[in-house]
Image 1 (cartoon, helix red, strand yellow):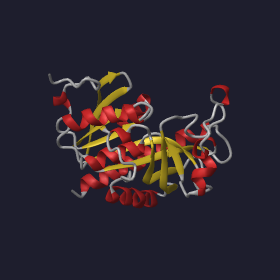
Image 2 (cartoon, rainbow, N blue to C red; image 1 turned 45 degrees about the vertical axis):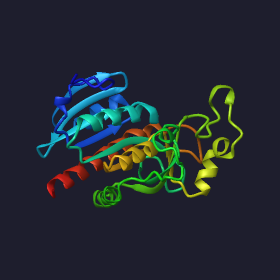
Image 3 (cartoon, rainbow, N blue to C red; image 1 turned 90 degrees about the horizontal axis):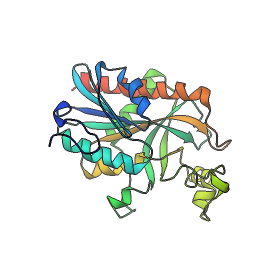
Image 4 (tube, rainbow, N blue to C red; image 1 turned 120 degrees about the vertical axis):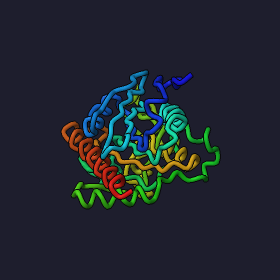
Length: 259
């Protein structure tokens, strides 16, 4: 059978894909694909919306993974199987800023991640095993952000398995919070340790990339300033997302040009 179980596409359509861009929101794939030449949507099953296109005549795939590590792990497992020519994966997501410098509208480039995603321990059980991206890709993304004058922060990302309790939000059902300080007081706890942002997936991405020797990186748009509020800042969301997309597309173009 040529079709993958969850991605539900013919693997022949992506077998020569060299770069994969992934994001949580299926609708964000449409924005990302619009930056490619000859974009075509080839799949749309569950949370997995799939586009292909080219950049400088190089095949690029764009696939959404939904919210959280489990959905991302399924997508990566299947994508890795059907994309033997894959050179790297970059996630374009959204996040909440934890540091004073991580203001809304900027992008965050993850240098490593705290493994609270809930899924990666079922891939590599030992939590002492670090979640780190590809160093070359991460450094080059930082340099590209500087070149394009895109405001950014870089540093440690906290990846959580839950949005409300795991990120210290007080507006969940009944305002419930577990007893552990790193959860009920998550913003102060992790910012005191120097983390710059919080999201839900990049630690899983880094773990699977390292395990299977596929370079990965993560760029997220900062859409909230968590030390001040649990709320998203809508007027900065589109700005941050567009900056993140532009950064990744320009970076991939530079990589392809100098291969």
